[in-house]
Length: 273
Image (cartoon, rainbow, N blue to C red):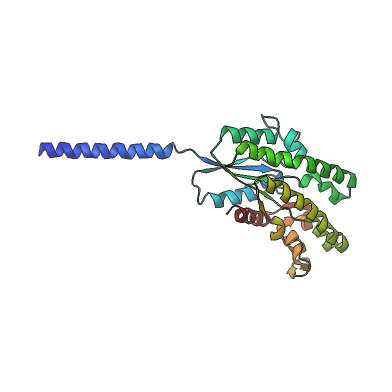
């Protein structure tokens, strides 16, 4: 009996060691990272709140984490960021000097462990066009043309082929002019956005990024379908979505609200699936 007791004791100790070893292995499993980059959209900015945890990156992270339990969200975005300031700094402070430098450093430091990279950048280059400042808008467009390839190419070069990369097309806050009688301005804003989005698509796609069709989710081209949206009445679908999903109609602020960010996140999720 003593022999069998010793065998049983040895077996239990062995099992405990195996279990402890498995627990240690689980504890040492390295995390995966979701690196969120870009402008105010990337930090979930909302007027009156500032950066929030309701942005598209937060919603997307919660969705991705369902299948990647060890995923960690790293936000490096900066409200007001342009392609120029992303490359060279000037708005937000980073130990490395700029958001781009910080992103490249992170990708290299965590080589092989970054699972997702998303970027939303460029809209602030030409946002001054909404205020009628054509000279500012043209200058921003020139910078966008030169700098967007540096950002897209530089990120992929630093991260290699391990991460899934995604960028996005943009919605059109200019459509809000419709509710104040500026229907011609609203209509004219769409082809201008098309040029911007075409460059976004081309640059990021050629550098290995999937494209989240936010432009499509907001039905930017749909002036035909109408819907009722209090207190504005009957509106074209594209105008209604700008009013319902952003602050442009209510506060003259083009940032997405919580629902808008959920719609953007859904577009990213579809692109990454």
